Length: 356
Ligand code: SF4
Image (spheres, rainbow, N blue to C red):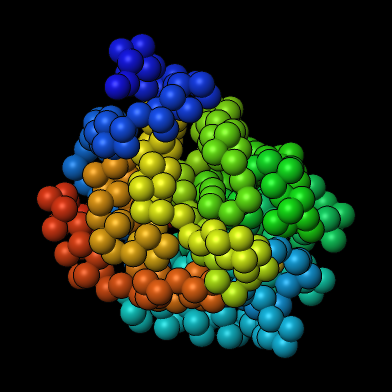
């Protein structure tokens, strides 16, 4: 049973690490009920989603993440004209946001990115550009010899509305050494995302769990996110993302030891504990239907989540790692999914503002 003391801390947004461990040991349904109460108080009855499209600039990458099933040896790099054409298709299909990202390479320098963002902004001024992870910003700024602050300012000036909070995986150098040793360290990720917030470029935040990390490392990750938010206020949402184990080295090693993907209860506990740890700090918790599947995502809306993410018209990354939940939902279907849970759909942009 959850103690009165922890209940009080949860409602005031002050749950600590020991409390969080205790909460993960109570009956999960008690945990879900508490998270649902906090969701109701933070976000009410509305469930948001965004009509968006992923555009992958390249499927080549200089990185070597053990969980990656996306990068290939012989791949493509989109030109500015090709990106603009893809944005045009998204626009025709009613998207209000494009999420632009990909691998990192020598060719992906600041000029490559800024040319593309300027072209999108001038051709489609109403399209929201959600783009680049701290890893891509860190890499491009390093090649240019400028600070991540300066790099963030430049992409913001070219029309980027928000950065993505990906490449966080698990913010533990022990874990990063095993799963993504060529990526930014924990501190470099923190510094880059903080720089982004400081220049007024808000971001979401993510956690990829279910591989080599411990429960304590998952919790530590969420507390790092909470600490950054207390300083900058720049996070728009938090997205717990279950690791997809297929077609990648980390997943294959796990499967050889008889360990497969996260369980549904584990996924729901992550949604719930994220809501509780981040209550009063980050108001939006996303249940990513592309990872959870439509039905578990609906259940997650009763375990702390208030957002379903995007309609996504392509999620090559999840599909490459064995995701079987599809790569696209129409706005009508996503609204139906939300209505069936007794909640009210709200179409939003990357800043969580309502859009028509
Ligand atoms: S996960 Fe991203 S950064 Fe890592 S190897 Fe794949 S494309 Fe590169």
